[in-house]
Image (cartoon, rainbow, N blue to C red):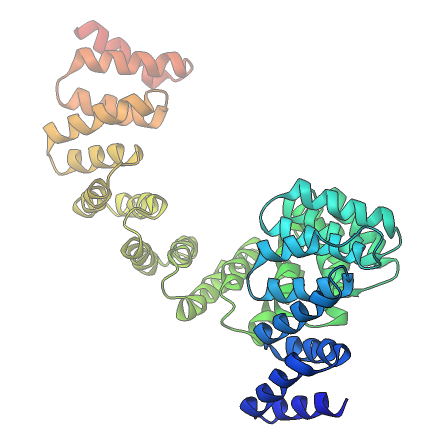
Length: 420
């Protein structure tokens, strides 16, 4: 096969024009063995159209040869011609030695199209022919995982792990761990992540291990893995939120806050990092920094209701009534307003002596908070101050019914009733 070796050497040395001239000669007048071997090599080097032409030429002579149909189909898949690949695979006779492989390829193609039931049928048929073939078990595991059928997926991966730890470059322990974790058995997944990392240190596996440890409540282990990941790849954005959460659960919000600030340096447009950083800043008493974080989050997403509500809670505590209304107006400009903001606006307007606007905001909020005692207290005393005693009677009557043991509510209600 001197001619084949020459073409391969030319390809390796970047002499593509010379190599393609040799290819044309073999396509036209080479032996079938040369066409077959060159087709395999060209496929390997990424010359897919040329490989396809060689396999098609061979099929003119051997139209039912399963091995060639498989090679052609794999080439078509790489070219993005999946429908044509399916047509070629369907030509393979069930008595052909390549038939089980064709079923696995077909299953993969149907899975890509979201036809999971058809894909499963193909794989189970292949499994019936080759019951001990772990590649089929692995393919079934992948299919069931994608479908969210984690119990079935775990059984398939278990069969693979009886003989193999790796299939087609994929660590089966890692797949098993992911399936167990996705099924909610977080602690049971951890030993499989350990095995996968023992086999190969891979950043996605490391993150999934840390995340699963966090879900299982092993915060120290989660911190250990996330820090290891941060050392390997500080731009792995997802680690910062989860590492901060682990530190918070370990009652170290200060460290969590610092981690989030690090994450923001790498992922400066992530509104969730700013919001969580604001919450932790509040927790450690850094109100100015918390406000800045919340405002930055709202700059990135003016409709981030959670940030607006938490910021307003801080502003109300600081009695910064104008700033409270600024946030309310910002949210109103974005469309639908979170109902809590009506209450915030009512309190702010009341303290700014904008009494008619306060009354309007209280009325808007009442529809949503008429069963909330704290709101009813705010609203009730506002109504008394404004001389709206009949309405105040209604509100304190609700308070008495909700908390009959509260003597203050009873006393206010009684006095209001006597006056009316």
